[in-house]
Every structure is written in structure tokens, then in C-alpha cells.
Amino acid sequence: MLKRECIGLYKENYPTHRDDGVDWPPIVVTNINVFEEIIGKAGLFADPAEPEVFADQMINLLNDNLKRERLEEIVAERVIRLFPLNQTANGHIQIYCDPVARK
Image 1 (cartoon, rainbow, N blue to C red):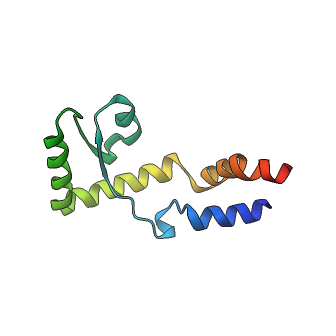
Image 2: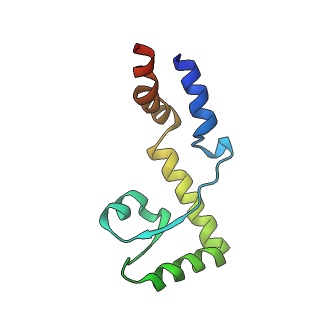
């Protein structure tokens, strides 16, 4: 498969920026270190041993439009900054398309 075809497939199936019409929903995740490092201020955290706290965080997120919109902006900024489209697309090309092209 040609790289050009791979890029087309990538953009069709994995849009990664708001310009592509993607909204970035904020999420609620467990408060383990790796998630806190990855998500940062772009989501809400809860102790996995306390499911009622998870539920409260999700309900809070659903009911508080301002908080949800603020977190959506933080998520979008974080994704664009940490995973630029060119870098992400090139990574996918190296993983999926280059081996196919070499055959």
C-alpha cells in the first residue's frame, strides 16, 4: 500500500483534531499514577475502591456544563500539544504502512 493511501485511511478513520470535527469528551478515570500523569487536568479522578465516587464524578460532569466545556478545551489543547497530527500520522505509517510497502 502506498504511503499516500495509508495517510488517507488514517485521516478517514482516526481524526485527531477539532478541525476534523472531533470533540474531545472529558473522562472519569481511576486515580492511579499513570492515569494522573496521562490525563493531567483534562479529566476527573476517582478511587477505584469507591464506585459511588465514580458515579458522583460522572453525574457532576454530565450536570455541570461549564465544567464539562472547560475540561473539553483542556483535553483538546492537551491532545493537540502532545499528539500533533503529523507526528501521530507518521507513527501510524511507520507501524502499519511501511511493513506492507516493503513486501
